[in-house]
Length: 301
Image 1 (cartoon, rainbow, N blue to C red):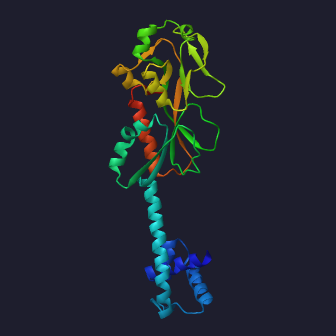
Image 2: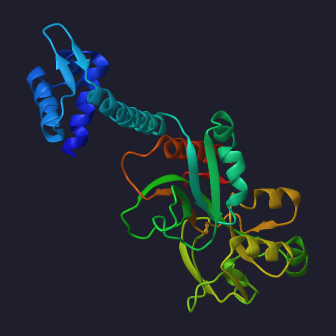
Image 3: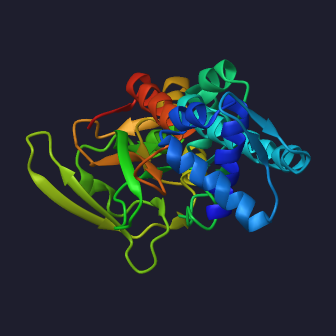
């Protein structure tokens, strides 16, 4: 490392044409700069510079040695510039992890950011199962619900409500329920949780708590699949409010017991590091946050 430092000092001396000029550029004393050059000459056993009271001149050996030092200096400056660019402007590959259900929101959420910064590339990894951000080199993950304790950094992007939904065909057969207890014997669809069933903490229209536990007839680890089966009339399902807006407006689903609260689900941006986030991550998080603020069915619940 000392040799690299001395090479950088030597390159600066040649670039600025004097020991004093290099010293000012490097924030060193002139004597310290001169000492570094003398150590290079002593260790190499050659004279690199002809010194006079007015100017410095490279020897033949110094000229050849300077070519390598200048190349090293230029590479260091380029690396520094690229680091600053990563900090100040989004570029390179953004590796984003998202659930299957959220994948359809990626284009409208990040489309403007990608269009404005052609040097930014996106690699989207879609999986409902949690993945290790470090091993898969993920820059940013969109996660839902309660987060496990970890050293990762998390910022809340917003949230959505749980809505109880059924297909119009189901409603035509069973009618609109007036109380959750009327649904205990119905066929339910639910996210797969081995041995737990589907546990719901409800609140009545007057705020009274009510616990409801059912055993789903059909379970899946994919929320989008649950919605598709619900639309097909296979049973009742709790769905995220932002996920079912289109299906409700199109008449493929009906919201049941709208005066009851079935709880909320937080939405998070999770990153493997807390500090010194590159611009691509910072600006992607900001874009996601703006998207959730205007998305129907999402917000701070």
